[in-house]
Length: 221
Length: 252
Image 1 (tube, chains in turn orange, blue):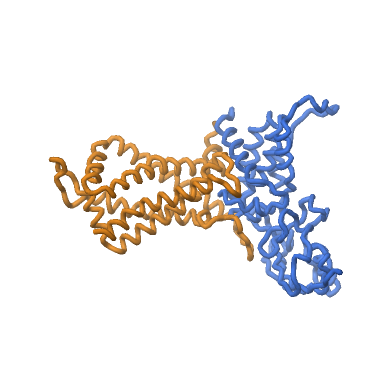
Image 2 (cartoon, rainbow over the protein chains, first blue to last red):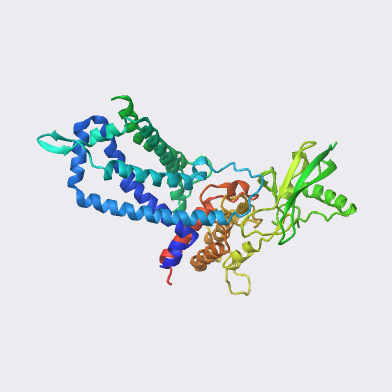
């Protein structure tokens, strides 16, 4: 295996980008969404889930380290790919019809940058900041994570901020999922591709599922 | 009866190494049966007679098969007639008093040599890295010695339709030459004759493409819309496979 070529050629960089993105999607985004759904079933279940997560510390830390590495690798490769693309377009056409490229594809570097800023804020809101209240649950003292989330989403600004976050995630995923497969060498046709459609539906579905929490907390207090 | 129309041309004029600009010219009494390049010839004749340097553009066969001509016309590579080159675009696609914006194929590796002529030698340089098959010369072998599946032969011929005009590079938001390189790699990767050198072909051609400053493919497929020969993005998927396989399993 030629390491330099594998990771630093144009296709190699894209494989790195696709793979680090896929790791975050499969090992972080999907489990995170699964946990979030429990929020809809009330404080007991959600707090119990949060407490159980704390008992799995070795696994959680392992995944956190993997996420940190993935984010750094993903952003580094994305920066290199994007800058190379901008350099290759030093002079632009004065008129340019772009019938094919999607809005999601066009916005990839920007939605990606937004997601990074949102992740930083999200960690500050819910991971670095400890829950203020503790409650009894089945005879144990546990952190009131449910109450903390609820309190966070009583502010209109916070809710709008998180909804914007979800729009960025949705846009990013809808291009990312199908583009990853094409980069791996699976053929995603230009027209009538089921995978393109599924990619978009998964993106909308995931962004929508994540968005339920702030909306519900805000509207049904 | 053919109609006559008047159109206004807004054409990019540039000498090598100098800053370019758009210039406006009138094309009077153009037969709608004329091809786009014939219209350009008529305009150039007028310019020459009035002492202005004619607009430089490339052309050769004027049958849509050589890959010489090409410009971005009103924002579209090779103009508004799909699946043909600029020489096969006809003036009947325009209306009287239309304004036509004509500019060269743009990308970092395609520097303007003069007006609408750009330096496309980068594409040749990519070919030199492996867009061929090394064979021993001698008598032509018996045709049925190497059986080839009909479907594969057809797919190879589809890829081989690429005429190397560079429209894909101009249409790509990233100035990438992936569709071109993918077509050139695919036409051999699909045939048994191309197999012995497939790993080094994919590797060397992609590395050359990167070295020349072409951008990265972001799977947005503008190239496939622009291609006058209908080269499909399935070739890009194949190039990705060829390259990934070659990178992971190369002996070096």
